[in-house]
Image 1: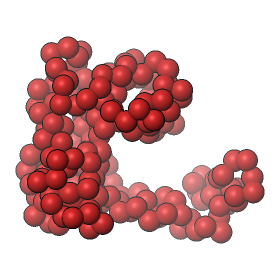
Image 2 (image 1 turned 90 degrees about the horizontal axis):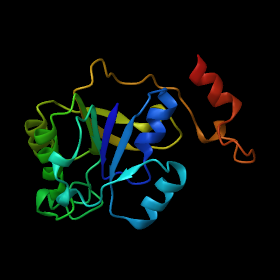
Image 3 (image 1 turned 60 degrees about the horizontal axis):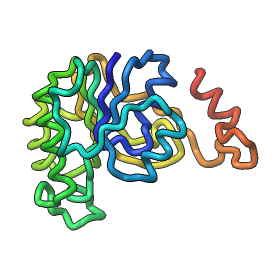
Length: 186
């Protein structure tokens, strides 16, 4: 499988794919933050770093099976100035759309923050799907309300595992306590 991760960060996409047991032949990462790139290279040395999203020539890439990314959210977040697509960082969403349209990946996934309905509708129109809203609190002890646009079939709301901070044992080397493991298994 060939994966293109836009706004790759520290390559959480690779972590997820590895945990799910997917074999990745080529993982192309578009990222400009040097610290994030160093973390990725340290953890996944075979990552093919391709740099700035605005400079990617889609013709230089092979057939992409999975396109993933979380475009910058500053323009959409209530913690920001709510400039939506007028924010230079959030405007990079259109680079995701450009590459999606040029590459025609088999599957795509875009993540972003909960936002005003009108902005959510614009993104949905460009991607041709409505988002699934998932708060990480159903799978962890933190609240992280996010929207996921995808054409991957059979994606549904995860079961709430009711994990609390009490379930996390911070004194252990492994941060996942037995109570969390039990909840995940059941």
